[in-house]
Image (cartoon, rainbow, N blue to C red; front, side):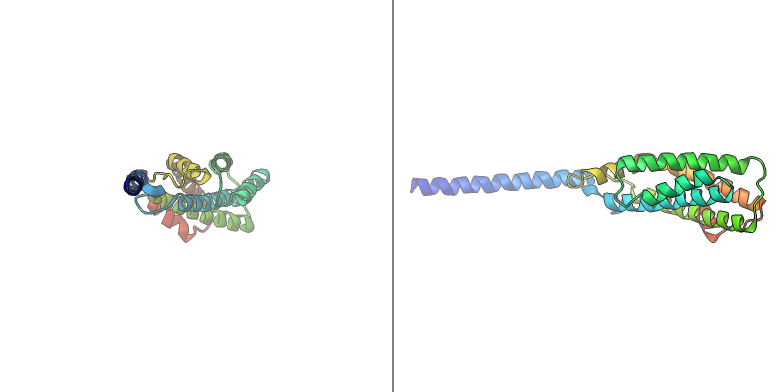
Length: 207
């Protein structure tokens, strides 16, 4: 009889301990934000949308650089845009960001430098690039809203969470830089009789 009572008592104690641990773990998950932003975006969603935006920006750089006669720089930007994937690691994102920053710097210097002679085909390619750049800015603005209050959870630790944290830290600077390139590209287009795509106005309104 004593053995039965002891077994029942031990079982009750184990169930109680399990309940306390579960409650504590749940509280910890809640405190860490569950791997989502206040808007409900997960780490995976933030990375995916950021990659889409970065691909648009790099494709824009590639098109506009080619339109301005900078073939080598254009090919480098296009290659990195192609290699960037939805599940990009922090290192991959950092590498893409460096190439994109370098491309934008060369692009802005070219647009602000001596007057560039462009044929109709080059103007068309520049306009396509400008549309891509505007779409990238729109994506970045969307990501900045998604990541508001984002905190990685205990269930989302790993490469994706690290990528999301990197995006949270770097996006404000990236958005400022890309926004500057967009405005310079718009001014250049106006000065060279290049039609502005609708996306350019939509993106400018968000900055």
